Length: 132
Image 1 (spheres, rainbow, N blue to C red):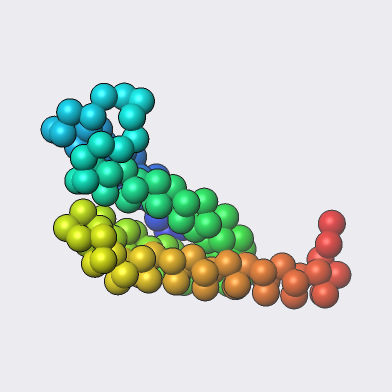
Image 2 (image 1 turned 180 degrees about the horizontal axis):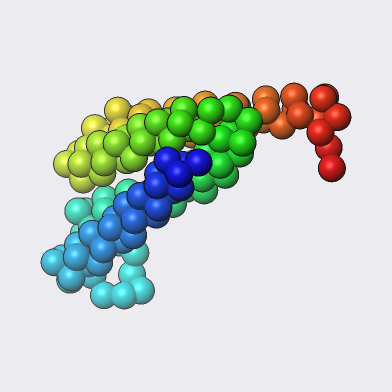
């Protein structure tokens, strides 16, 4: 489980780092708080940050629950693919929002796989009489 813990911490750090990038873009482009739009590049950083929050909420419970029923190392590897995907997402989206597809796929698919794996594990446990 230590690898799942590591990926969890890295995902949270990555999210915080994206938040710092939003703040830097806010300062660079003169977007006063609490505005959430105003300059195209700021808007892109802001959307990356919010989209990452949306996927993080999907990733973390899926990764932790799937790691309870399947090899934790596999969940950690899928989580690492998510992290790489988010980096591609950031760079693609900031350059041109139309170029976010690869990064989106590399971050959404691992979370989706782990979500299905978690659900299968839970159902198998329930069928085996594992309900508490």
